[in-house]
Image (cartoon, rainbow, N blue to C red; front, side, top):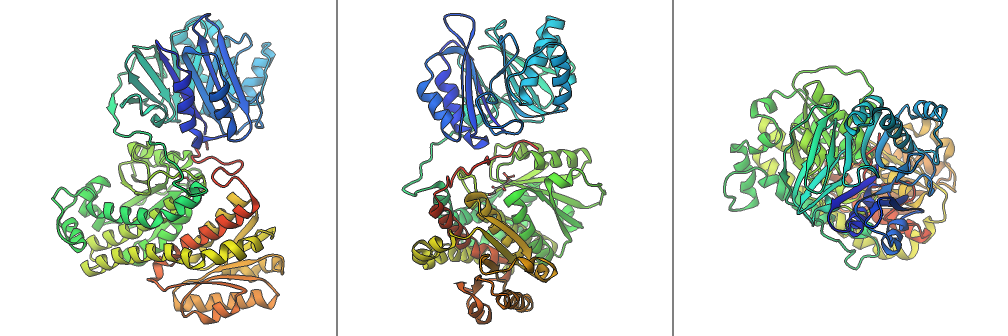
Length: 633
Ligand code: F6R
């Protein structure tokens, strides 16, 4: 899950490569490296650094050498600790072949042992270095680049996007793609390669998304593409209309805080986008009209790769995702089952791929992913495509691999999310899926036109509560609550029904940025074991629901905690006095339609967690050990 950028042209490339790397920091920020072939002598010059977010910046500031061909890498460690030896590029023994790698080589230990037996010496504990030695060994055997690459791709298993530089071929970038994205950019007397075209989007809009299982030999004015069996392959040049816009924090201390505050607007944009999506008619009039226009129009279904008949006959909805997106999917399960009355299942992408698959007719698969690049979700999508299932990407990134590979797509309008901890992607996923559940319900006759309109209004109201509840508690959280709760070492989170996946999301937010241990349970499970953990040193956070029956069950769970001298923090709604009165720390929000209770609580929960972490002084936007986009399995 690393970032790769390379360039070949007739001008020095260091600036372009390092600038590209800084844009790909979201793919990892453990360490970084740059290698080029010097203009003055045909040998490698390189520099690599380890240690948090800073190495890329230091490389930019301190690298002095340059070359007309070069490549860089930003790492998120999978094999081997974070140190300079494990940073990319990696080299063969003679140091005349360099490689940068994104992905994982399966069975690399075996290849490494074989190479060591042949006399190779390794300098790192990465799987990636194996590739440098293997390609070197194969090149000595075949003495031909093309044959070497065919042999290499036969040997290498796993997922990999690779770029090689050989001192022997000083004008050629050698690029290999297997299950990890790679994009080639075509500019004037210059070719660029990167794991995300954002790296060079200010230089060219003409790109080739390298097809899977291909390798390419790229000079400043030629591209030769081959399939893994060595046969020449054609390619398609696509114009991409998207430029990297440098974003600043607009006065906020962290991107996470800025993104928490952007949610109301992001939700409004997402709903409006849903309403006009694919509509081929000129949209005029009130918002109320939009849904009726869409009802006559099947543009939305076409974009999803569906038809009205397919929607009417739908029997199962499946959602597949990871992390925060999985929590949003679990919340959305209640939407599809309650609103459209369609049985809905939610799978963790990393588990789904290894489960038995049962082909159920009239099913659809929604792949929910902020980035559209998460390796587990992408591989689940590919598996489903191979079973000829209907896959639909629900993502925030229009240019993502999932949008290209799924049969249909729908885009949230969160805007770029920079903070590693997801905030506005989560709330816009919930909003989009709530809207979609109503839209499917409308098509199937489960939902009336008026109800559809109310759903859109309720979403806007939830977005309003999301923001105003932060304002209501801002002072108290910053001054009093965050300093107090930052002193605890562990928390328990509880929810029930629709607030259980929300409690999981809250626990994940706390863990990932504050590093405080947080355990989440469905509240009904408390008495089956976890209640043994309850004591005055472990605050218990309960998230309420607006369903009367389930609310009363939650009150019983809160009583169980208090009876054990537990310290209770409660997120509740106006009128829920029984629960509020039990709390040591109550947060009370205005009431909303029950299915949108999690969305309404989202901003306050995130703000509370953000300020606990701020007290602890951690790196909020780039927490330790994490990366924004998880492109390894
Ligand atoms: C947590 C977080 C992650 C992501 C997960 C899936 O704050 O951001 O748990 O939700 O890695 O990423 P996407 O949504 O890009 O597939």
